Length: 204
Image 1 (cartoon, rainbow, N blue to C red):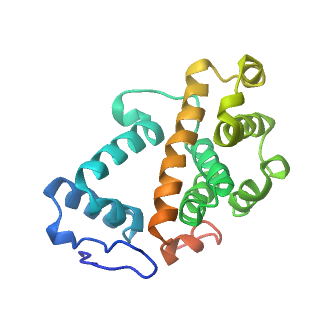
Image 2 (image 1 turned 180 degrees about the vertical axis):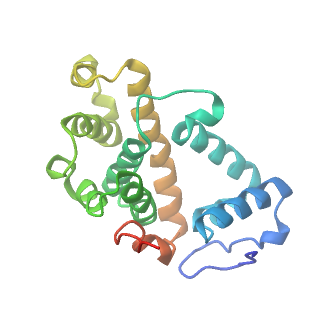
């Protein structure tokens, strides 16, 4: 199955046709479609500029799937998605809250967690370690100029090392870029994201 979408409702920049894209980008999009069953709009929206698409997804993959670049991380997949969901909500990014909230629900196997984290992570049903992680992420998101040595101590107390803290900050900063690009361009979430991870799959 191939997608040849050229426009998307409420998106200011037309999506390029899949057949017009460079081969490496087209193949990556088809792989995502095969795995997810649809093409997340971000993959087509950023393909408006292929060089930027490649740079964006290279950094995305290095942060969100560090094993693909030969690096390990003390953050779980779910914790990385918590950071994206919480800070994207602070940046009022509809696309990233909905899309990454869906992935968060799936990784954590908790249908309520994304809504809780997006609204108020301190009252969410997550661990004290994760609340400390999100406290720091939110400070980087909203007051990075005020981050100081005192902000590292609570993270160290919960077992995060300095490389993990770099990950928290880098994910927050990277998705600050993504949030702003999604919002200014009018990127809308795919309808599929809204129900993902909310209702358990029926057993065969």
